[in-house]
Length: 62
Image (tube, rainbow, N blue to C red):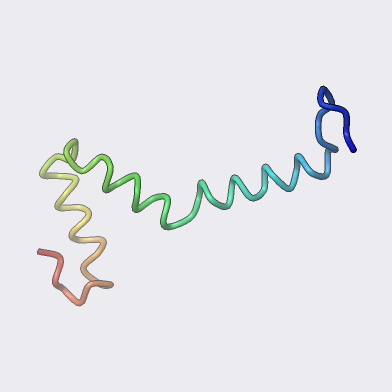
């Protein structure tokens, strides 16, 4: 059992960092950020999002 005041091994720390980066850079994370900041979006931002999402939404971005 590790002592309470020791850091995890470098391998464990790298694995934690890798998993954190994967979660932080996931598509779900980006969508969540956009949704959380929706009140701050300008008309220009909304227009760009509609243009970018049109191909995946079948043109129903309204």
